[in-house]
Image (cartoon, rainbow, N blue to C red; front, side):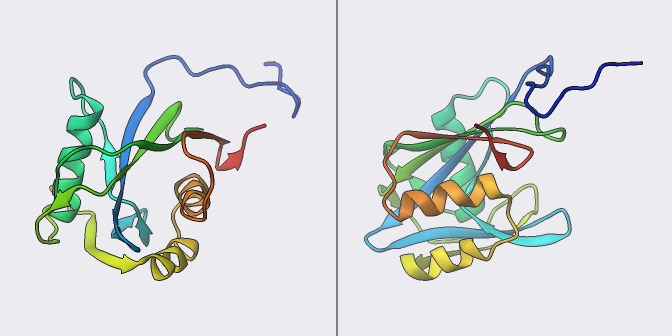
Length: 167
């Protein structure tokens, strides 16, 4: 019979590659861009972004994902806002890097090849934060964004195991 881990023991790491994800906090003065997408039968609000494809640099993935989900073209990539490290049965060893970007141009339109993004909007910060707070997105997707927008320090690393903060 296999041994079970006590609640205080660390789980054995999953063998194999992790998942790299990039996200963009697209800011214009006191407004930010959010995307609404279909995921697991729900409609959620989140920042634009997605998976880094094999052979792609982080900046290339960010530019591609922003273009696909928002129609906007990134100029320069802004500073790293925060990092989220999660692990779950569905997505083991995921690292999400969120960059704050204010150098972008174009008109908002959706060109999502995955056909998950429903709409993209530029909203006043307080309205965007309310939508994020009520979103059905996972805790690791929402909590760090809200803390950052509320004035948390930059370059903070957030860690979650199965959507719960890791100690």
